[in-house]
Length: 420
Image 1 (cartoon, one colour):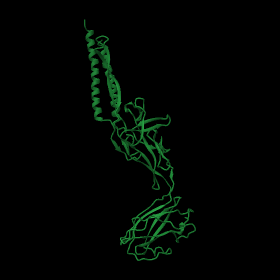
Image 2 (tube, helix red, strand yellow):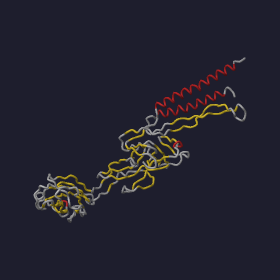
Image 3 (cartoon, one colour):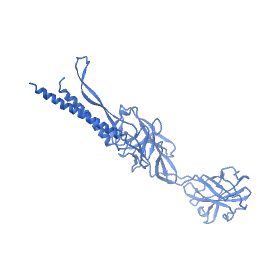
């Protein structure tokens, strides 16, 4: 084996350490890159000729080469951003982003997303995030992977009030009297107003008057102003509904609930006929204390447009509407792989599946072993800066040692040439 072969052994070492230094520099340059996964280089030796015949009992090495560059998929630290569409995966998995031009799926841990002008949920490069859409009611998930899109012009239909829940205390010290529609304020002991929605989402104010008519017995009368009734007169109330409630000697309600709140015959001024409304006074008391409303709820609402979105730990993208309603829009899908080390880097913090990685295993966030979603957060780079500096020092010294072999071999050749 010629002495000159040491030149090539040293050269292979220099080449290998040059690649290692390139990987280290790539890691360090991406120490602040969201979702970046650092890589490391593995070397293997090169064997040359056998010194003891074809049996190859002893073989002389002729240098080194890069055998592989492995990507580390350890999770980085999660940082808070305050941006609602920034997402981080707490656990295993990758977001799925589709290039609609080539129809190719890519996989990433970088969750810096936003809604584009068409309402699609996209990453910084315009690739569309994939997930499962809900049906128009927001209750049933369509089990088909597709682009996540938020229709920002979408309206949620109104719902007519069908139930009112009211909890109050009625003062037992009141003197019994008889209620009169002609003078509701003067013939009642307490009143409270409540909004009632019709089928078009229009709100109508109904005032409920409570009058003690006998010991432990109260009448209630729901009135609506004539201006809000078809054919009515402003300032002249009309009966919306009436009934009675009774209490025991301890002040607890004894009347079975619910009761019908709407018992009149009303057509609203917008031409819509009033629909059935029930009232539940459960929890109402009659104590010797001033009458007061404690809770008032009704289940109707007007039409609303989407005002924003929020994202849950399970990856549900929820629309928030101007009428106070919320509705599920989509659920994020996450992909995992039998072998993460078979993935290929595709640039822009994306990975591409390859035969060595196996086919993607797609699940909903929080299911099938994949992680949960942390909204308003991003995953930082997993590069350990201190570790990279140590690797850089070792690689630099190895490169210097290989270069020293070249100078030493050159000196040996010079001595050989000078032999006389």
